[in-house]
Image (cartoon, rainbow, N blue to C red; front, top):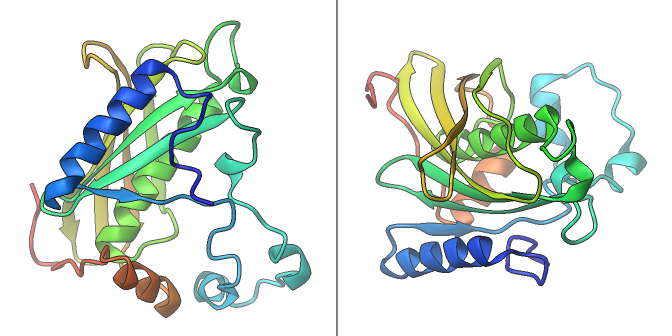
Length: 215
């Protein structure tokens, strides 16, 4: 089941943004990205690309679920992502539920970091097949109110040799409030064949030119 589709826990703002991006997707400029509890759980060979000596417990991996999708409806991470191929950009609309509280009335910093990591990761995965992070830096500007809706904008900035640089920011729905900014670095030659096939199947995989700057 695609968990990035609207459910009764979504606020009016969340549903409105989703409908707006679905409308933009009609001409092909944006693409809605599905999201499930189980993600590449059978692709053990891809993990071994990074950690060939890792002793993975296969029976446990078969039970694995995507971390942000492990809360009951409306209690944790409610989000949907859309990708713009021409702009190398991913937008995530996110509503953080009551189980993600840090300081009273506000989202936990770890929950914010999780969504930044997820959005940047999806952008990199589509752009270059990247599935592991080398570096992630986050600047928290303002706390995010619990159960509010925010927009996470992620983009590819440039490619230098085998390094892929991305950035993102989190803003309020009206774009007037900046909550967080982040940058992320990936090596670009570590994508497993199975992941690339999945991206190609969904029309998402794009091979980047390492000599070309995207800024």
